[in-house]
Length: 64
Image (cartoon, rainbow, N blue to C red; front, side, top):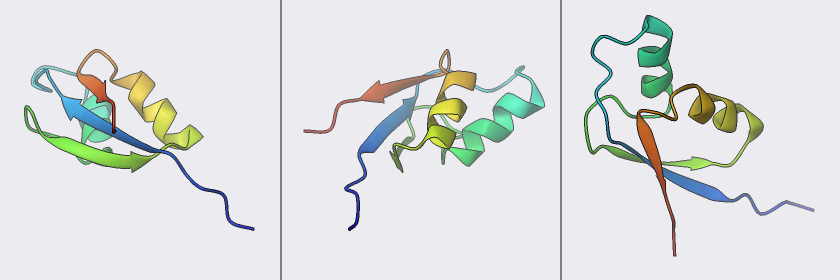
């Protein structure tokens, strides 16, 4: 039986310039890196941890 994974859509709203290298790497890991870039990700504990690390730089968008 396969579980239906939820998809999260995130958008970068603040620049990574001047941030710690680990936060810049986390943005790249989320598929971001430039302002207003969006990415769709599976809702996993790993992704939730990455989102928590850069929550001040991104926003989560509702998918209808």
